[in-house]
Image (cartoon, rainbow, N blue to C red; front, side, top):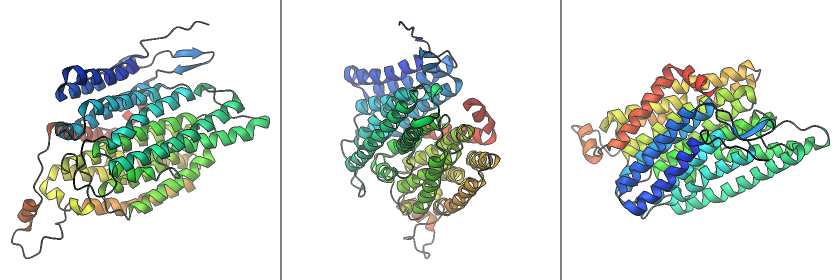
Length: 484
């Protein structure tokens, strides 16, 4: 049977894939770093614009009653977010790329390939397309985590190579579990399209139940949920800081979208509730013991994933709150990684928490941005975006008579205050090596820790991220309307 293809609906995918190809060609034929970076950045912006231009359209690659590519306004918004994150990470990586720490051509190509996977996830209408999108999003990151010509001498913890291997091995296991779950569910129900997914009945019901559980557990890897969470701290700390930012935001957003697509149509409430409680509790308790900045942010992101899973435990009623929380968290987490990148030397790792003592005295605006991010992640003013995100999850759980899970969310939010407040307070504390007898300890602190020049791409990215966080904080309903 012949089938027409709506190429207009596929424009965001064409733009994302074309960006990857053009970045590689620009590096090959022009051989100028600036041209490669500009091509990738413009391609990312074009992808975002085309996603919004296409908007809601009839689906393509359709069979009876379902389509494999479903353009909707929420999908367009999510595709634009993936493109914006790609451009932001590229901006954060510019100082290191200019120093030649990583090859610009390969870096831009892999980053654009990952963006292409994110676009596929946004528009996916069946499990095969969804899993292919997830793997396209993830596979380039295995290389990006360890892609560097030389490593800074100060790196004394996880190396990029070992972080990459850790990420790869656990990802392979999770992909195998996901595919097995999808296969079992297909055998039991005969459905692959998301619009046709349904709970199995009769003799195949137990088989479908196992398939759904395996599918959810495998997809939970992408959000670093327990039990497939151990890769995140080691990988984040071993990766370049901008790549860790992409892992913590875009990769996690892809996992949330995949989980939302599945649990909104199949009954996985028991599995999701258990995963949510374990993920948020373990993430917060282990974060209390961290002494390195990136590892603390990694364990914090694991805990934040637990709050998202708590909303998804409701099934379809919790999807809007979960997606909104994911976007709020993504923006705030990206601000934190942007500030850490700005405070460190290009190509350096995240350092220990002691390295950030007094940082706000040397760079007041960077310190204020990091405090805004930490307050939002904790759910406190002035981080209104994070406050509304947590309230939306708790309110949704209470409205659907899941008060016990709402109580667990609130309890974990209180536990998380300990390490968020500790980091924020240390930004305004003088380093311990400065004695009290010094006549002007602030000036001495500035001499020992000189203020690094803030590159224009990082400054522009930080300003844009903070502006988005402020807008979402004062007008959160704009995001809810865009995602529903």
